[in-house]
Amino acid sequence: MHYKVGEKVANNTQVLKGLLEGCILKIIKDDETYGYEICEKLVKYGFKDISEGSVYPLLIRLQKKKLLSSVMKKSPLGPMRKYYYITEEGNKELKDFIVLWSEIKKNIDNVLEG
Image 1: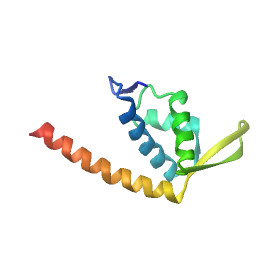
Image 2: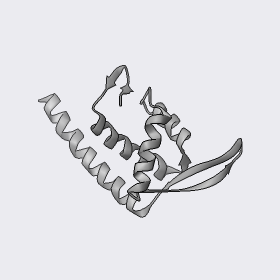
Image 3: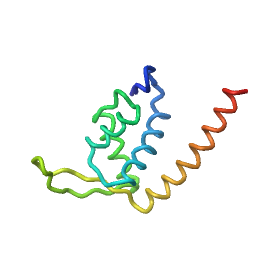
Image 4: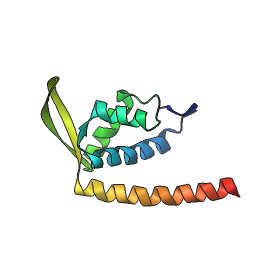
């Protein structure tokens, strides 16, 4: 799994999956949404080449971990869509992710500035 961040391609699969899971939880916490819209938001935030084929397996994994739930709703543009929303457990996981990311970012900044 490769992701383009800015002009660089990142290819550390496990790290990126974990980071994307945290980002997806945050996007869904802000507003229940569907898979394609999540992809669009990730692109808007700088994940240039993110695809639905990368996001949907993460959504399934987050649902299996009971961090997300979903409901089918009628789309104004046609067929039913699966809308995802964050669970109570997902909110806890997101808080943990934010704390962990803050610590990791601080440590990396220290190394790069050192």
